Image (tube, rainbow, N blue to C red; front, side):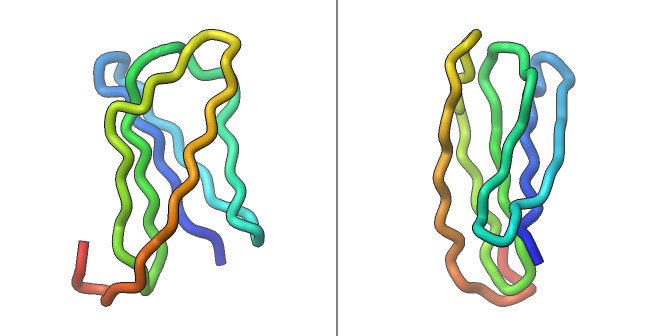
Length: 75
């Protein structure tokens, strides 16, 4: 089962969600430039956030994340 990935830009009231594939890859297409919050969640792992992710026009971005093992009560 893949991790849930959410990409949020509060200034533009934009939120998109996807899941990682079996190798952990994910992709968001056709996003407007801006500053984003990227959140990863998966059962049995701690939630991970990347804040202030800058996305620019015609500039692909990569955000690699390693999820730490945690309990279901941890965030």
